[in-house]
Image 1 (tube, helix red, strand yellow):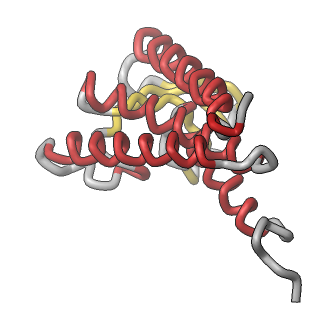
Image 2: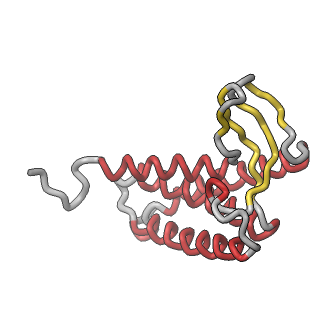
Image 3: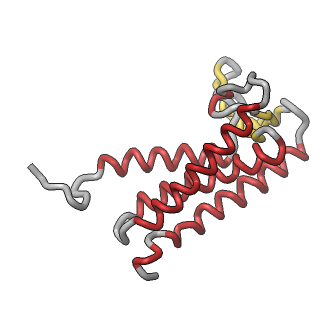
Length: 166
């Protein structure tokens, strides 16, 4: 692929995340009732259905509904920035391309939920012996988190282009 397309071929990963995210949300939204729990690994991991009208960790979930469109606009802007960023990457920036593609796929997956239903469908519940619960999440959230970790790790890589070693 020519340099004119940058790392846009990594959009296949965004599409894969999006498809898996939407298919899994569709499945669990139809297979479970609200807050029903199916234990997968006792004391550690369950499937459960929850809706989140807010952002990460239910931020602004209690607002009157305006947050739906705010978060949708933010996701659209971020997605556009990520596509432009992917296009401008150099051929050797593979880890960064992977990170951006994961975040993009996750952002688009949650955007579709937010616009179509007014909430994001969550179904993965991680907990510790019924004493500690991590907020329910989904495949899109996991991809965004993994992409953010890869972005952070990429920042610490040495010998980036244009840098000099002291």
